[in-house]
Amino acid sequence: MESAIVEKRTLELKKTFQHKVPTGVLGFDLGANQDELFLACVDGVHRFQANDGQAELLYSHNSYASSVAMLGDQCTIVSAGYDGRLKWFDLEQKQIRREVHAHQFWSWEMVASPDRTRLASVTGQYIAGDYKYAPAPETEPSVKVFDAVTGEHQWTFSHVPSVQSVAFSPDGQHLAAANIMGEVRIWNLESGELTANWTTEDFTSWGIIKSHCYLGGIFALSFSPDGSEIFAAGMGPMRDPMAGNGRQLWQRFAWQENPVRKVDEIKSGQHGEGLMETLAVCSVNRLFVMGGRLRGGDWNAAVFDLDTGEKLAHLNTGFRMTHARFSADGSQLIVAGCNGQGKPEDGKFRPWGVVETYDVTLS
Image (tube, rainbow, N blue to C red; front, side, top):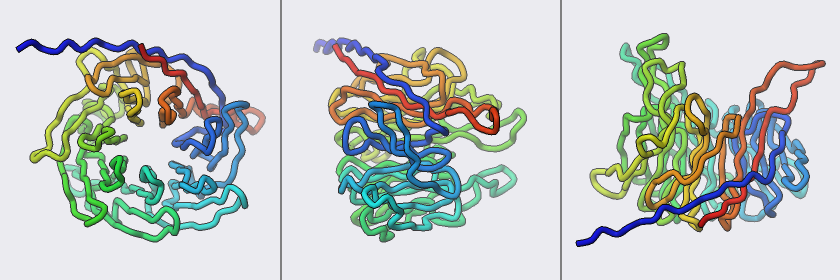
């Protein structure tokens, strides 16, 4: 039987826009039009116009804003922050309409379901629980789900802290969350049942130099377009966790199988070193992007073929990439992050948040 020949596609990424914003960007969501973004930043939530680079500070949290999501009415955004709170902001009235104290610790990440009817937020602080430094049990629920419109609390799920990433399935029926130890849990949002639970040790470091503790974990999750598989991103193990020189890493799992099966991971020779913090799938062009920090190698973000896992293009942006998204039609890649806060000059910090857009051309 002859093997099918799969031709490698050619991908070009052309930078079309770069602009600085006042403070580092930790997350963003697309607005009602293609030129509008909402940025979760160190100093609060900004409305950002890509056509002229103007950023308007709408409101703040009591600490960093870590995530933001546009709701289905196109008139409301919800943000989460390191103060553990979720805030609903009315874009027409320009005022905070609702505030929910979701966590005692910070919200690592908050995401909206594909239909924008639910919100999920994850939290947790890694504290050594025994002499082997295994994480202590959670002191509050690590995963919470809310009604996006009313703010009503719908589900509470248990995990091992710290829980650093969360994702809804494409149909909104399942929720995945992953932690510092590389443990992934997936729940059914109709029944509340835990439907999958497994651990990959490839994202977690145990330090034998300088720091005797666990570090790393899974920092980003994204389901495949059909929902049958899930991607995880982070950084490979290090002997010195403070060095930040683990390999750039993604893995792909068939989570509905029993036992869960690892389907694929980043190819040998296609990675450098550095923590990967964001991952996004483009169903239109059958691509996915992974980005974060560069410690060694020649890229801090790369775009891969969704079907083969081959790296098609990469970027060295020169800044820490915290979030990446494809436009709805797949024609653009939008990325954002932080470019070193620096020291104040005349009592003011220079702008150190960054937003960039790239045209995506496939052949």
